[in-house]
Length: 458
Image (tube, rainbow, N blue to C red; front, side, top):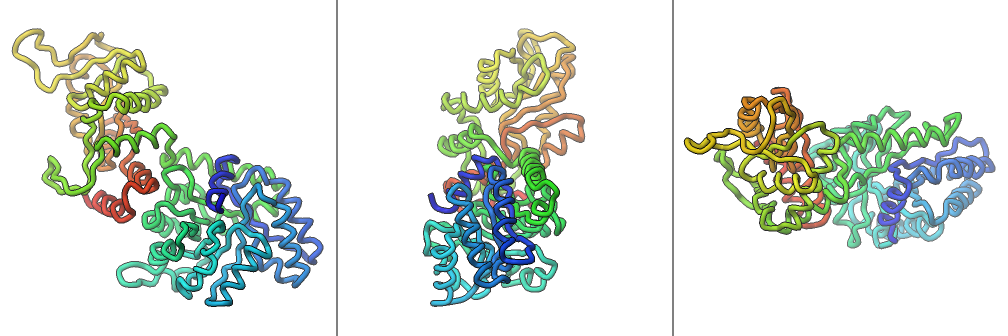
């Protein structure tokens, strides 16, 4: 495995995005190794990687350097190691730095300064099995003095995020963005949706875990490395401190709504494959021109994908209390039928128009007034059509509180339903769909950014 494959494997195995910094505050070189060994033994199974900072070893000269090498060797092949060195030079000097980090010390990755440009980074990225983390927006207060200066029409740190991946031919570049700058992290994630981001600043520097997750987590629930040093190393019980931090990060990952499971991930790929999600220029009902169009009516022509979608709906329904399903015509009728077949729950539906003959019923199907129904639809934009469809159900004496859709276009529908007293449950958001398609290289970063920019102004 290359470095980032190793990192993802370990993060998944240990269910952790926590990185413990090995920055021992020792009084002599002899203490470095003892302090590190104790910390590694206590946290090895709780982390996605370790990160020694070379300054704490170089301070003790040759003995410190030997302790650093010994530390990396002790960690071994099970856990990735990021060498925090912030190197930045050109030509043969950069080549020597790269050799020292990767060949002499055996580190899996290294932090680099981008100030000298791509030719100072490429000697490191040429090691295809190793990783580099380019400083983008650091956690210190002085970061804003240079890193936020405008370069053309964007701040310097965002230019770095855009350029850094081009300094490698093997996709072995990550970024460093401080947790103390959540807005910058959000913009970096928009610019670089696939990259791993090393996030210092949690703990002693005051960075917030939940804000960091909300700003930077990838669609697959990965992509962030939370580096913590003093809050673990200086704790009375380092293992307990690391475990608490890992669990806090994982709770924020789950609460963020950004993390989707394998079934949802596969469904996004299926929707793109059958043309249910299209990119281009489309005129919407409102008259606006959209760079994306979602047509879930095609699900009826692809029964295998419809079945997978029904399974995703069924997972959302497990936590709801209801007597019947109510599907909104027309797109949700085949979806509702598939969900009813999969869950064994009865289905009704409100008519779009009431006939002047026959039963003249506004709601088709068998039900009893007073029952609770969950409304199903394909997607939600503004929420107006949901309110309109709920009215005949309520007039028939049915209680409605929950609406379940496959896709939330994130155009204000959720907020409107909440104002009306309803709860929306969406299997996927438009942002999650874009993240997956970008991650799988089905669309380009530029296409994703175009849709997000349109979404922000629509």
